[in-house]
Image (tube, rainbow, N blue to C red; front, side, top):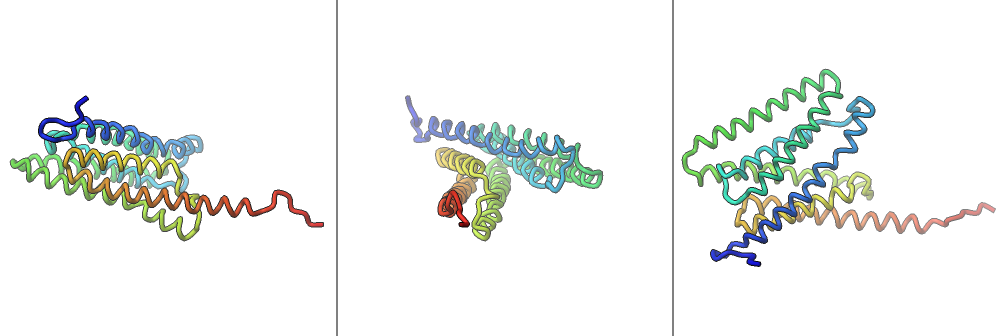
Length: 236
């Protein structure tokens, strides 16, 4: 099987990395399901915030537009992963709106409209640029900035883990899925020679390694501390 074409591009490896990235991303998309099962069961959003889903939807739609053939080339895997991601986020937002109080409901609806307006402005505005290279740079920088800010959000969790010396707020499988997805799309961007893909995902890969390292370190320490305690304590 040929894994690279005559022009030197690693087309088959790029497809493998893209498919792997789509699979690992699915783990991220379904991770909020336990939260929404609780929301639907209690018929209340309690203290949960809907803002992360609004921002995730915006990020998916911007990256979806960047992956389209109107902006970049050979990025179909970006269209699929962000199309599925946008669908999941929109479903979460709708469920959140249906189960929250009236004040928050109105605010979420306004933010949802703002997201659609911003994306529409980006799409229509970029299509007015006749030079495709300029359009690629413009949307590429916006997509890259959006991804970097999304990958930077775990920095708050990392800081919390270091302060509390506990991995309670950093689920292992979520961190693992983030790392695997980032690493896959980092390789996808490398094989596709697309800096707007491999740069933010490279940052995400590094942050994923940091999260997993912290999890292993603090989880091991907590287990060691627990095993130091005797199974049966005698007060005689």
